[in-house]
Amino acid sequence: MRKPLGKVKNESANRKLRRRLSIRAKVAGTESKPRISVFRSNKHIRVQVINDDTSKTLFSVQTFGKNAVAAKANVEGAKLVGAKVAEQLKGANVTGAVFDRSGYRYHGVVAALADSIRENGIQV
Image: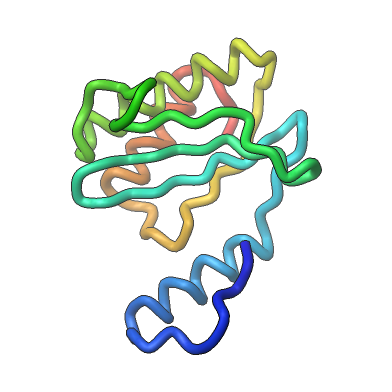
């Protein structure tokens, strides 16, 4: 992830950016074990599965857009999105992945997403 130019003036956004960068310094995805990156907003959840060796997004699952999972950004929606991610990872013959929480607390929706991926047979 590229650091933004200039200063981030909002203090809470700056703290989140520092958390996100420190997590990304430790977490990297490969072809056999890709990185699962999470974006959470009040309305939607977006998950990208990324191979950092080639800097390519393998696929994404979200609660909006063309290939959307019909769900909201709550715990039940996170479970549906996690099941869809695990299904597509199994289709790509991937058994393990690393989880990038993107600066969010591992609690609530983010934890439910990771647990759902684990319950559906992917080692996270």
